[in-house]
Image (cartoon, rainbow, N blue to C red):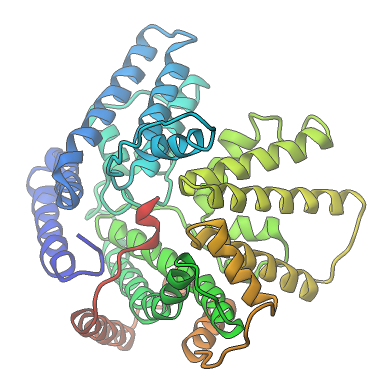
Length: 457
């Protein structure tokens, strides 16, 4: 079920909150098992066939962790991490590598066409973070219920944010309704949920109508005019931001309703004045994962400039592949790796770029590389790029109003995280957010619901 659907907002979520409140007060020991059960119900609503996959991965990794604590072995954790990556590769990358193999004359690798389990990229990375920290001596052992909730907690199981065990495990032991700020947390959770829904419904989804037809035409090999190319590229730049940051706001808000604080994932990324700054603001939990579990183990900035630039390029290329099983995703990640490497070189030679120019260059780079992220092939990307650079008919009918509003909100407006946590408790605000929630519900009932873009990753 989608967060932006009636079945979730008017049935599952209220029922889950009522059950959670009753159990937390009557039988506190059952609270965490209830949340685990609710999480599996939520996950199974999408496709019950993959519930055993999620449950099996949790049980297997928990058993590995317990075995390692009992009898450490140098090979056990690396083998478990490799098994997690192999499972991810089976579902997500097997057909991709088969297509690559089929480019070699004489080879005919079969494509299995396996369905991609939702959230597999995210819960695989959660397993890896815990196992890596366990091997490094930073993580303790946890009971099966706590570990299952860490992996499967329903607000973040499908599309993050990527939560480290150290950020949430201690919260499972707290009594959410015994806190003096319990009511305020609940209220701010509702506010975050409402703002996230509004961003998705009023900004992200309408931009899809500007973006999808153009990229579909490019995928079909049709000529893309200059107006269409700029409309689609600008539209997707803000669509993916409001879609994904809106999902994150909802996830953080829903978690707060159950008394749990998840980490912030976006901090006005389109205000960044350098590419490094962009990645500190965009999908922040993924950026930290890539830094701590790939870039630093590869040497980071501690083993000379060539090693640092190479580590950046490799990390971002792998990050691109994580986003999708396609050469365009690889190219997108590689370009960002090269861009970050160029930034390192510029800082080494002390090239000072004024902030306005840095913002312009960063925005253009991010926007142009989004084309590779969104297009289905290099051929489709090329048709978009021809339009962007004026190598196609000019066209007409550029739809700019929603794009302009989205651009202003993304670059000038406050982030949902900052706004919600800074607003003082007032009745007029409560009334305003209640009214906004009702308007969102009316909009959801009026239009078709779009799935979240990051669900496909």
